[in-house]
Length: 155
Image (tube, rainbow, N blue to C red):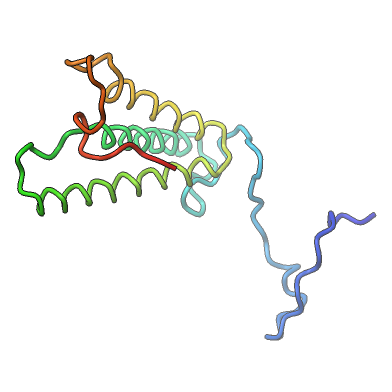
């Protein structure tokens, strides 16, 4: 019975290692969502197989997503600041926000259901606290240009 599922064999090696690919161990990457603590998130071998480390990884992803929302809705540049320093600081904030958002995305790409839920929960709580009308003093206008140093995230 053929188990290669239509995949072609690897090309022949020119460095004398032909046939050695059978002795190497390969890690299986999930391409569908799965549940369980035995996942590899962001870094090779992390969090491993221990439940405590998996919980730490979920908290880490939650905090990253929460920070993305905080940066997306924060006002850290004082009005009337000089243009060049304020622009440089705004660019740094944007760089940090995008970097954190990409880390969350890469975590979700582990296809672990717990990581996905932690990311969604972090974004949800962050938006609820910093972006929704609940904690805004002036609910008349929710224009992000007035309430945030950064423009909204876009894909």
